[in-house]
Length: 55
Length: 460
Image (cartoon, rainbow over all chains, first blue to last red; front, side, top):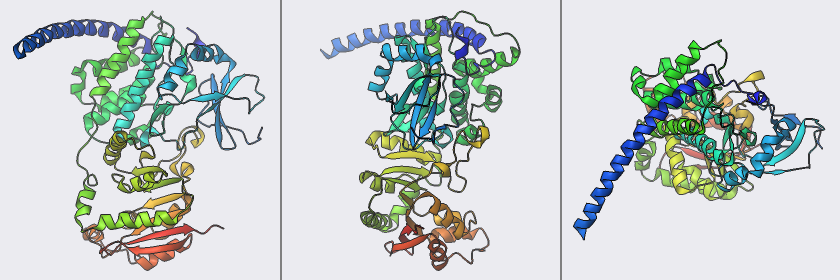
């Protein structure tokens, strides 16, 4: 790290908290992406069905 | 080079450079210690990308000034900001948009191998009808193994006040005045409702953040490796949370003021016609402030004439509505401002000079003070002479409405208190203002008993 550029105090424990927050978010976003993929899969199917119905 | 160079009193924290003023023009010095970052910022097209998007202030490198400073690498002349404002003068959605803009810039600069090394609302200003990032020296080369240096600062200066306003449903702009460097997380945590512990993003960025900060106080900083993905996740999480936050938007006394005022037969239309008439009599008005502007209907008359207008009201809800309205209407000549005339923003910070008071910044060509005087004189017991002194200090031209005691609104104000205002009359008003002003024109507004004055300051 280039310490002279840390002109603001990053905050006590800011690094540690970001490591923990980063890990938690990694898990949370992983499951969110799966959830979104499943939703997208079904809505796509439904859209196709709708399109078929309207044709 | 002029001798009247002065270091801006708020520009002392970052060794990368500083802002200074010469003859009313603001410049930014870039120091050699920041050379590598500045060169990369330009070379990587990061600067070009953001300025073309209109979200970063444009500058030109200039040789017209030389401070004879050995540390100086370059001097930049940025586009000048008309009127500097502070987050305690912004409505909720202005602060929210400033926060989202900061996150957007921190995230998008990664593609150029850069990011933001600080994140405070002071880096954002109002420019040409919208919020824009002004601190060119905030960008630094991204270290792919480091977390976000500005994370805590962002949580304290943006996230904490936004969350507090969202959950209490109250305009808490003054908290930022109390803690201009950010609301300490343990205080934000104590003020937030317990239920916020069960919201993932709020829990992580406030509750857990504060807990770890308190626990690891005094311990050695851990330089654990971080990854770019984690960095992006962190920014996304903050963005998801902030996008969900809603402005405290309860119906206030003033937010439906004009609906009611408009019903008083033709009063509003008459007043508009009179203001228009007075404006045609004024030459050389380029800047103006509308005090107690409510939804800014009269500011629009000024804006239409290309007068750069600060539209202010103490009601943050009104200003928030106005902010949305001017965004939609693309009205570039109106700048919204939360301001209480009875208690304008003070000078604060080190030496009481870092952030200037409203009066120090207030230099306009025209003041518009419609249906305001009774709130100051009767609502707050401010003597008419003191009110006249105040107006005289901010602009040479004044369009002011006098609301007499016989007016319904004043009667209502007096119904709950003793009438100690024996000196409140049109004659006393004219006398008090004659100390500073010459009455150019005086007309009655429609069928009401209110008078509208056009006054010009006596220049000594």
